[in-house]
Image (tube, rainbow over all chains, first blue to last red; front, top):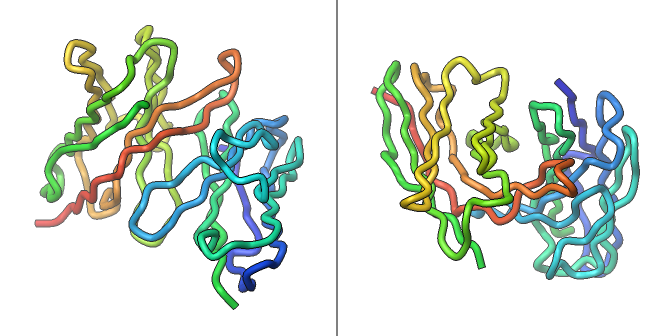
Length: 108
Length: 121
């Protein structure tokens, strides 16, 4: 299985800050990576697919980059509604599909 | 727009079979993959499996011996059966549509709201 390691697991930030979350795959997955946002009691929502493509309706302050084994989700100008937990998911065709352990973004 | 809704028992006895149904509205099964994902309390999501409208199925190897995903196109529903459950199968279970680019990659959107299934006697 391809293991996905996210860091940090927790980040404290203020409104207006820039937040960067990293996801590392245990083997190369090209650009087959997705990012999700999850709020308490809600289903995950797709933010980014194919490492850097912004999903329809997602604000442009979210961006993704990377390929191979190292990927980054960046949130610029953090807004109150962005406080949530973020997950990466390796989306390579070869199963199993796997998710990272999550990064919780909390208000400083 | 496509919406998904999970349904099924919230409590299952150990060693029995967990059965859930996902009802899809606002779209058809064709040209997409459709899957199940679960999330134990306080943990990250875990992919269970998916099917393609042509009949292809693919399961997480860690669950493969216990999982079956089936589809009823006449009702716009697909189902999950997970046999011989234990407390470790307690989780929120989600159904979701999977997207690809030219058949490559698998990412999920939208998701159903999820349903909590507890395995306990």
